[in-house]
Length: 378
Image (cartoon, rainbow, N blue to C red; front, side):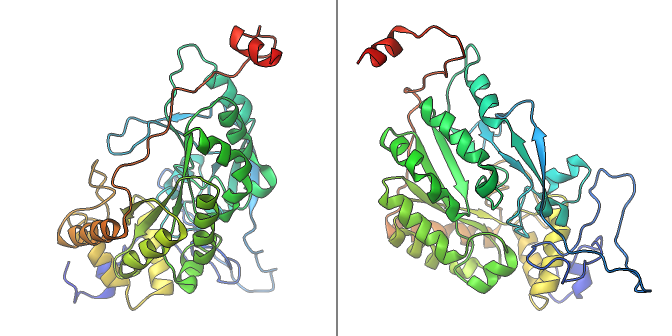
C-alpha cells in the first residue's frame, strides 16, 4: 500500500454508522452494523424531532441451555484440540477481538451486540460431567476461554466458569485458562491444589501498560496494573502463569513488547507468547472505526503495516501464519519478542499438564469402584 495514499484508500469502505458516544460509553465498538449473514443491512438513525432519545446500551444476559459444552477443533497451529467457552459474547469490549464474528451466527452484530448481548451457558457443569463420563473419553488439556473470556464481569454473578472448574478439579482433568481478568484470583482455592497435581496453568493477556490506551481499546477488562498484580498473586499461590502480549498492534502497542515482558517476568510469569493483530471478517471494519475514532492520525499507517504482514490483505487465515503474520515487519516483531523472552529467562518449552490422573465423574446411583471404597473406608 502506498503510505501517501489518502486516508479513505486505506480505511475499509463498508463501515457502519457510528452510535452516539453517550449511548456507547464504556464500550469498545463504535457501531452496531449487521453481520455478513443478514439479508438486509441495518443502520441506526435518530432524527431529533421531539422523540425520546434512544437509551444507552446496557448489558443483557440471555440464559442458553446448551446441548454440549466441549468444543473440538483440528487446527494444526494451536496447542489444544478441545475448549470450553462458558459465555457467548464478551463484555470486555476489546475493539480488536477476533471472536466478534461469532455473534453473527446468532443473527446479531459483531459490534456493540457482541459486548452487550451475552449468552450464559446454564447447566454447563452438568453437561461437562456427562461428556467426561462418555465411554472411551480420552483426556487432553481443555482450553477454558479460547474464544471469549471466562472471567468477564458477568461471571461474578453467574459463576459458570467456577462450576466448570469444580468438575475439572474433582475429576483431575487438566485445563489451561486464558483471561484478561483479575477475577481469576477468586478461584485460587481450586487452582492451587490443581497446580500441585500438574493440572492447570493460567495465561494473562497483557496488551499494553498504558492505562489510557487500555481503557479506550478494551474498556471493561482489568487495568494493566491489575493484570500484573494477578500474575503475581497466581504465581505466589504456586500456579504456573504465562503472559500473552496479544495482540501486537503495529504502531499502537508494538513498542511495548519488551516492557510488558519485563513487567510480567518480574511479577512471576514463567512462560510468554504473542499474537499479531488479526482482522477476520467484521473485525476489520470494527477496528478501523476504532482507529478513526481514537487514533485518526495513525489509522492509515496502522492498517498499512497490518497489510504488510498479511500479504497486502487485511487478514490471511493460513495456518501457521495467522498468529504471527509474514514479511519483514512481522519478522521484526517475532525477533524482538524472542530476544526479549530469552534475555529475561522465559521458559522455551511449554509446561505439559498431566493427563494420567483423570478419573471420570461418577453418575448418580453408580456403584463405587474398589478405589473409591478404599478411600471411603480410610
